[in-house]
Amino acid sequence: MSKQFEQELRCSHAGETGAVWIYRGILATRPTGELLTFAREHLAAERQHLRFFEELQCCYRPSFMLPLWRIAGFLTGFLPAISGRQAVFATIEAVETFVDQHYQEQIQTLATHVLRDSEKAILAGFEQCRLDEVHHRDEARQRRSNELSTPLRLWATLVGAGSRAAVRIARLL
Image (tube, rainbow, N blue to C red; front, side, top):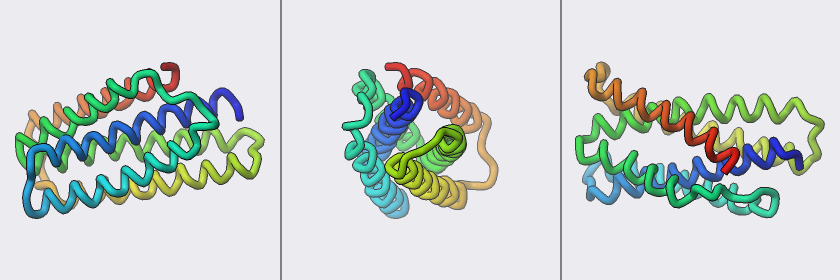
């Protein structure tokens, strides 16, 4: 497996670790009703994604920064959840918008290499994760109010920038 493939596996594993912790952060606020159901369902999907990448750990070294990704993920879920459901849905939409684009870029880049069948299967797994994340993004978008307040727009921008930075770091560390 190429070094680039290993780096992409590492950063996707780190990202899915962070995603699990986002939902744990939301659930730590003890939400009820719609938000509770949303967080539980999405946590289950993110755990499944994380298991997919953990099963491939024989192919790459996990990020040394996993403790940081757990904390960052938890805070990315917890802070909006204490602000209210609209903040949660705006956060999830921002995260999943980034993740969709990131998975697309990974798949396009890695598919340009000569791939063994095992690598093609891994890319198919990336695509399945991407499609799940698109569903999460769309569901969050449907549940939030149409217009985001200025603070929520700023928060969503910060979340996207943080996600981009985390990918760059996770590829290396």
